[in-house]
Image (tube, rainbow, N blue to C red; front, side, top):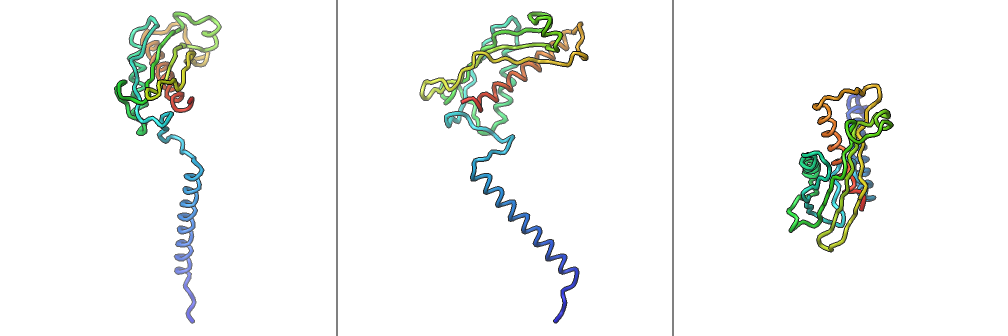
Length: 188
C-alpha cells in the first residue's frame, strides 16, 4: 500500500479548512437572519410598514434665511441613500414629515457667556411631526429637538469670520438632519 505524500495531506487539510469556514459562515448567517439581527449600516425601514415618505416644505421661524433649504437638502441626501425609502409627493405618500426650525443661537447672537466658554459654537432648535396619512394618526412628535455644535475651548477664537460661521451653521444643519433621520427610524 502506498503512503500519501506530504503534498496531498496539505492539500486535503486546506480543503477541509476552507469547507469548515464556509460551513460556519453559512451557519452563522442563518442564525443571525433567524433572530432578526440587522447589520449596522443597512437600510432601516419606515415605521408602520410604510414604503413612501413625503418631506413637507420646512418652516423656518429663525431670522436666518436659507436654513430650511440646507436642511431639506441634507435630509433628501440621507433619505435617498436609503433604498427602503421612496420619497413621494404629499398627496400619495404613506407618511408625511413636517419640520419647523424654531431658533438658532450662535456666539454672535443668543448664546450665553457660559455656553460660549464651555465650547458651544451654535445651537439649533426645532420640532418635527411624523404623520401616517393612511390612518390620520401621528406616529411621533418631538417639539424640542435641539442640536449643539461644540468645539474644544483651546481651538475657539473670539473673532469668527463670516465664512467659518456659515461653515459652522452648515455643520449644525447636517447634525440636525442626522438627528431627524435617526429619530425617523428609531422613535416609533
